[in-house]
Image (cartoon, rainbow, N blue to C red):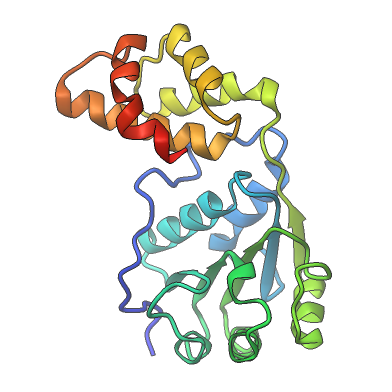
Length: 235
């Protein structure tokens, strides 16, 4: 089987290592990025942290980089419609598999057995399994003790959400990577009006940028206020 699944899964256009604000998470960013060089000698990496800490961004950034380098990669949001554990377990042994949101399938015996089979398959080849979850392997609630043990024996890394004082600088960084002129007045308005969660703020910033481009508008507080009814209710 090839390393690509024929599934309607799209990587986020904004997910890259270049626009991931690394402060406080330098080690985990470097470890995930090093997968492309096969610098890690273990068959798995386990990344855990709370929602909004950037786990999905890192896994999708890795997937995008491997695809650009013409490597075998599959990004799998756990529990996504149309993705079966049997299909995942039979992937090419040289594939880098990014399994996101492990909690979605924890307790599903078929899924857990499929992931264990995938782990052993990749361990016998040149592949790597990168898993994200909210909790470390010992606390995530896996029924299969063998699977939790294997994850714990690999590289286990904690990723921390951005501290609130770092949010303005992180947003400036993200805006700069997009070539976006983000006035301080807009930045402060967004931080006051939205949950102080980097995932929410970055997502909305991307959408505002696209809206400004399509409508040929400068990003100002009045323009952002026009978008509130359309965008802000989702957050």
